Length: 192
Image: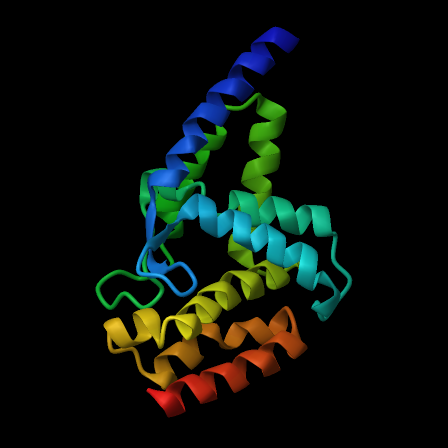
């Protein structure tokens, strides 16, 4: 049994290497190179370790780390949908759920269920951990865009109002990070 589980786990590890090839619209800090999903997930994990104290509510940091590392794996099959895409809704949960079942289904059954449950909890966004994870997921591209003179906001002519609408849920995870974000957005859009 353990050998069979190990083989499944190794197969999963090989499969998720594909995350490195999923390109995002955002670019690395002070760079012209687009970030990939694996880099994004790693960066979010570090942000959680550094910023966890700013959560509105007590959180299980290990669970949040699992969420930031797992939440975009479905994009191996479903692709990355740009937050400000005007042709495709960013909430493509059905397509992503099919991807989650396939990719997490490579793992032994107990891990399959754990990863699907964590992914679903993130998607629902109701737990303290999911709220904080979503705050991190929105903060990172804001910081990237700020470092790139407006980045994708400028490139795709995204208005302040559109950005605000897409990121206002951050306050559910961290009021202090939300206040910082508002100040950053105000300054970014005054300068652009």
